[in-house]
Amino acid sequence: DAGVIQSPRHEVTEMGQEVTLRCKPISGHNSLFWYRQTMMRGLELLIYFNNNVPIDDSGMPEDRFSAKMPNASFSTLKIQPSEPRDSAVYFCASSVTGTGGNEQFFGPGTRLTVL
Amino acid sequence: AQSVTQLGSHVSVSEGALVLLRCNYSSSVPPYLFWYVQYPNQGLQLLLKYTTGATLVKGINGFEAEFKKSETSFHLTKPSAHMSDAAEYFCAVSDNGNKLVFGAGTILRVKS
Image (cartoon, rainbow over all chains, first blue to last red; front, side):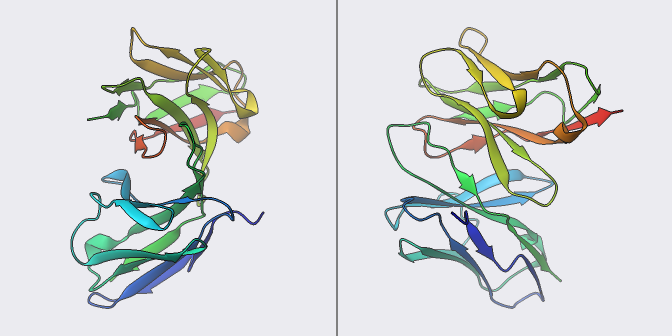
């Protein structure tokens, strides 16, 4: 299996622009997670989906952030408009929901820089 | 609410020495506990996990961790450090095995 695929790997944009990050989970996995990693705040869960349905979006910073999962093999995280404080590495992870203790498989991340 | 505290943001050991990375957690229910490793410019990779049963858990690359309920700890150890172990290590807790709460991470440096 190719693992979790994220694109782009690097994104540099200017403040006010729309940014879309993409994720393809591992085939057969039914849970998908979006994380943000910064030096100041560490690794934060933004939102997670189960069977394409958002379950917990309490970590989404504000209305500028939105996430969708139109089908089992694709998810997007959109920031509109972007701000310099959104600069971070964004990770997508997927897992199989089971009886508990499920391993999350992480993608390589998207490094976002907002100028 | 769940939380994780990792003591020491940086740990330095000599090659061949014992590795000990500390993790304490807070959880209102029996927790699921995880250790992940992150190499530079990569995503996180699972080292080991505790769900139920045996409290000493063995993982990949010679790492192990022991769940101690009385101490609310899940420290990570490895008897002999290798240069390739240099990375950042994250402890995580979950109350249902799905949503993870991560610690701040510990950067392990291995000196030759």
